[in-house]
Image (tube, rainbow, N blue to C red):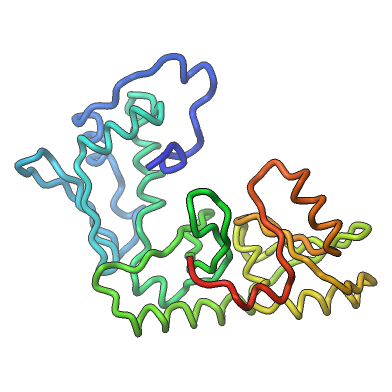
Length: 252
């Protein structure tokens, strides 16, 4: 877990005043939640166990369990304010990022490019689900069969191919942004040749087209020297690759 799991990071001054989130704070936040806001297929409960109270989340056949004590420690590390509003907001943010059920991924998953490693050095395809304003990755459950995983990924590639977007051309660079939802811009690379055709029609034919991919951000396309310069000047982790190399990428 990280600060992102609990919403926006704490401000600079708030980080200087660390407060401890306790189990009773979390239990009270669970009691205050409006079940209707979680969706018709989501059930949330707290069970007392040998190791302490456990939060149990059932979502469309997928069950997630976490000890309230562990969640409280992570919130404390993330500098969540130990107030009813602070803990409640953090819990709501954590629930919004809950694991994606296999059935939901199969029905609405979209394929996008993401990092396959913690060093952010290698790109691969990943199935994601748009949940409100968030893009949540799907990781197959332990009960998901290999054929069902293949079917879900195949369907996600098909949905990615019809994601709508907007192409902007600025000098030697084309920039493609998804208009369906923020964060799924790289879905366009399921069919990179279609992106190149759009660029040619807009007056930017590329002989040695290279892509600049920043996961969850718009996709840039340019000649190789320009693409390398974009990567060198970028502040976020990104990668450049020849457009034909997209076909060789695996799954994250």
